[in-house]
Amino acid sequence: MDETMKEKLLKKIAEKKITVGVVGLGYVGLPLAVEKAKAGFRTVGFDVQEEKVAWVNEGHNYIGDVVDSDLKKLVEHSMLKATTDFSFVKDMDFIAICVPTPLDAHQQPNIEYVRSSTDAISNYLKPETIVVLESTTYPGTTEELVKPILEAGSGLKCGKDFYLGFSPERVDPGNLIYKTKNTPKVVGGVGTDATEVIAAMYRSVLEGDVHEVSSPAIAEMEKILENTYRNINIGLVNELAMLCDKMGISMWEVIDAAKTKPYGFQAFYPGPGLGGHCIPLDPYYLSWKAREYGFHTSMIESSMMINDRMPEYVVGRAGKILNRFEKSLKGARVLVLGVAYKQDIDDYRESPALRVLDLLKLEGAKADFYDPWIKRYRYKGEYFEGLDQISEKEMETYDLVMIVTAHTNIDYEMVQKSSRAVFDTKNAMKNIKDRKNIEVL
Image (cartoon, rainbow, N blue to C red):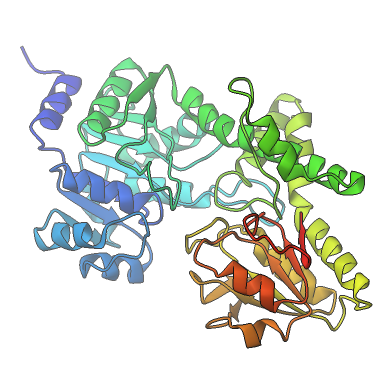
């Protein structure tokens, strides 16, 4: 009796005879490609950026969550290589799509990277291949967009000739405990056989649990829920922080008190806005899709509005601090400490610091930045250079220092002693005893 497609693929997974393709070699794709190769699967990374492809093939790492020596060793042993040539898809048994899913200028989902990658894959897709979308997107993308493109371009039938599913990426740059390898995975395939095979593939690579759900749409919505949950709770504490400022109450002390409760409360903290690829963007995907059903996600949209206006709020607070020194924001020298979207990483995607700096300059301030992890950033098509270092003498030249990212490798005692005024939007200086010149968000 002939083996079924499922039986063949499960056998190939068990024998490590699956050849893996990872489309998109960014913060999600490269760590995934490295883990697949480390698990014994020959892996090919696909990317349209020739620079990234060259770096990988030279064993040169550019992602913080990848160990340099791991990448170099895998390349040297021919377990991992990269290419811009999608014709190599014909040699792949498993393909993970890990491309960006940004918002467009109108805050609507831009799925062109998913569309173009899927189209390129469809031209070379062979029978008995597994395709998994990992890019964060709206519920329905896998079955409504990816499936028809793959079937039309390849002439193959989903479920009969190839398997398709969605398994949302869970990457937290800079997390010292949870990496790609040990973070639990959610898998939803088009059909139970697809789910079983895709889950088996991830279990053969990862240490974390693999949780199977009944459809790609469930897995897509699950990812949106993860990040919308955080967006809403951060929106709540941001709004309360604004109220507490008016009331003369420390929101940070309120949270410290609340989190002593051992059940029913999880601590979230205020800040100058949201950054990263997921939390600021995912709610827009859901609210956009909800309108297709005549449904408005009012609670989600309210939290988005609060979080989106936090950069304007902190710049307004900065102006009030300067007023106390009889100094206007216009013409003031302001130093922003940190442009990364979270502490101790070099990632500034969607970072609120970029908007804070832009708003300061629009108000006429002479704004500089220092970030020990980032020397320059690109915003609205323009590059901006930061300070190489900070010193007591340097700090004394600024009218106001704004801490926008709570990096741990900044000497905050020196900052406090050398600055005229400090606006700490992240409570990074909570352990500094002399607080006469510090104001906290």
